[in-house]
Amino acid sequence: MRNEYLSQLVDRLVSVYKEVDDTLDDCSSEQLNRPPGPKKWSIGQILHHVILWNEAYFPQLERVSQSNYRKSGWEKIPFLGWIRGWWLRRSVRPSRRLRSRTKDRFKPEDGTLPVGIISEFVLNNQKLIGYMNSVDQLDDHKKIKITSPAGKSFTMNLFNCLNMMVDHEERHLKQLRKAKGDLEQE
Image (cartoon, rainbow, N blue to C red; front, side, top):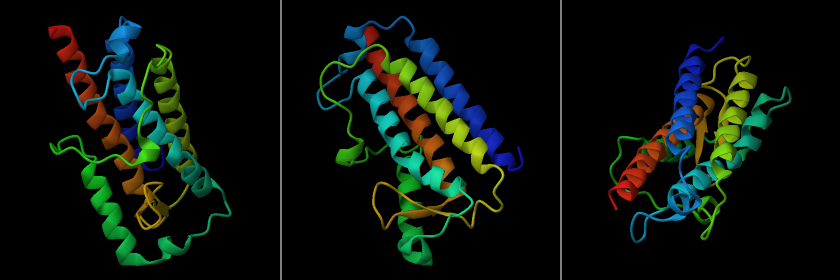
């Protein structure tokens, strides 16, 4: 790849979706949908949340990959949007211990999710890798601005956006491991 960091991100994503696929291949629908405790998401809900998050960013990645890309209003304001984007990226890091409040548009469905959510998660990750491949031809990912679907005033550069998306997946992989471990101990 032209942008070396993208190769590392792709490797991290592949590692995430392979672990999810391998770890959950024997998971029953009941296990997939049972929350490990009160106010905690089930494994299926964790996967659904990540899918919703990624899908919300796909139109932005599509827009940036087009040759007629133009910055939006918030993307032109250098400091305000950047600081909020920086905060958003820090809030989804895998090493962060505090829970983050999830915006409604990213909240997973309540109720029973099909076992097919695992395949949907893998396909969603492959689609994200496809977007990474499509933006690889662009120059200087630190100058290309993205507006987060979390809010119009949350802007960040493409480099930070893609890193944040992978960090977010790794954060929820950690949550998924804990949820599966909790269910196995029951």
